[in-house]
Image (cartoon, rainbow, N blue to C red):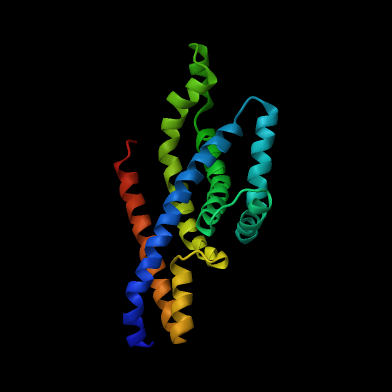
Length: 214
């Protein structure tokens, strides 16, 4: 460990931490929206909608995030959609998270006693009303742990954004290494920052889970 470089690097890495937090917060919000839409689509009574949701989820689960990131970064400009590296990273992370969150949504709703949906139908509630009023509120508690796991994965996977030059925690560390040639010191510091971030997320999730009604 080069403690002199470590002390100098701490504030610079904090800038990268803030960038990582921004990327992950935006990505988990959009990813949750995508996951809810795709998860509910997978429960649709309309077969083409279910098929489209299944294809999306299978593609996300069967391909590496790095390839998805590079596809977004290079394919969208070729299609006339210009995005900055930051937003290309957000789009890729959101789409990836959405695929996994969709499965969590489907599993959480599928784990509810089907008799409740049948009872709602018998009193004249539509499929949409049953989902919104009966099923989704009950699924929320069992949905929180996998959502937390996905946010933790997002934080770790955000390091891949350094490949397309997004200035996040890993990229900020790489720039410091290029100046001071102390990779062991900087990568150890980066590991500590990721550990603190992920521990904070896990702690907040446990707190929120305890506060949720049973």
